[in-house]
Length: 142
Image (cartoon, rainbow, N blue to C red; front, side, top):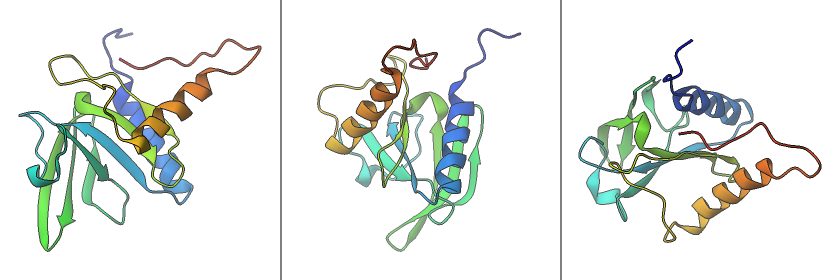
């Protein structure tokens, strides 16, 4: 057993599959740094939200270390490359249900200036953890 094996890429793939099966649009909230290849004109406060549905992407690969795909921004096709460690959350656009992840301090962090949509993701995630009369086995993934 490898205790250093991150659960994050597995959870991202699982939530992507759940959104897809449910007919929902999976969204990624990404902390943007020098390693993140995204169209910079769409980055706000060092963050970007990306639709990673099958309809919005081409050649989507949800790897263990990188998420890569092509997407159209206006008339231009862009190649995107996101370190898995920079994913702050994955959630369904329509319901805001999903999961938030810790981002390492070198790559950024979640602060109080998060958009209202993203606060909804965190609330849904926290509500999942707060089941009355039962200790939840869920925790924030690092």
